[in-house]
Image (tube, rainbow, N blue to C red; front, side, top):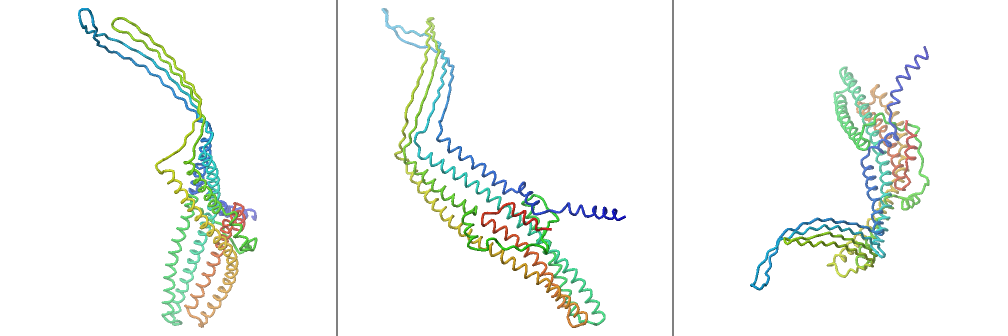
Length: 455
């Protein structure tokens, strides 16, 4: 009998456990379905082709071409001839046929091209920047998943709080009506309870809308609607940042933050582009070899029966050094240099901006973790105090020393404290992820650790 009960309980609970979704489940789903990450991967793969394209400018350039032609010419010619009897006009017809075959092979090897070397160096930096940008996109995905995940939980807790408040206020309204009917309270108490109940209905509608919006934000990342999300409970560990130094976190972020490193490479890429454009003033030197073979078979016959065959074969071979010296390009090269210099100046300003943002994000996230711990502890005590206050207020209401308004206010404070406590836990966990992102150290292991705190 006992085993049968255990089996029944297991069958009831198993679907509930099997349908739960953890933070790691959502993240792994996002890795497959998130369009932004796929876009970043495609951009990285596209930019990686810059390196072989730039390298090709330094390698031999080989070209081959061929030509075959077959032509027929059928015509007549008229000419005058002096004879003993005078000038005689003669007309003769002719037919000319010819076949021509020609092929050519050329090879060119660059010896000196400063622009090609600078383009290759620029391509190497561009590819490195693309790889960093993709890593930054992966970290950004972790932050977006974590934010959307806990926003859904916060919206759920808010809705549950509003629903509980509505149900409690509804009971309070019912009690107030009954007490008014027997003359224990005034009509104003009933009106206060009715107004609170109407407001609770409006709050519940807003909470449902916010929950739907939060779920939609998560679906935009994962392409589905995860349900039964795991959430932190009262055993959530409150861990101070390590090291406990705001300055050290800022210094780490300026060394490892991926967006800041990408901006640094962007400045170097712009500097290389200036050199590429200035190379338009420099000469280029290359070695070129060429071989051309042309064969022609033709014959001509005229009305007099004459036949004049002609076969030709030409072979042209040559090796030389080609030097190209740019003299004047209408001012285009100088304009491109000025443009590249301005773009380099813009990237330096961007680097300064990103550096300040990185510093600010590191400080804010560090302080967010610390204040988050203090907020969670304070709200835990607030929930206990609000629960005790509600019990005392309800007891006073029963004996007539407290009014309906007092009970409603006490109940609102309790539900508000419970909701704020849950949201403070989510904010604390989000700040941990944001701090790791600002420092450039965020990885899946951090998500795994947070996931282990969810029940």
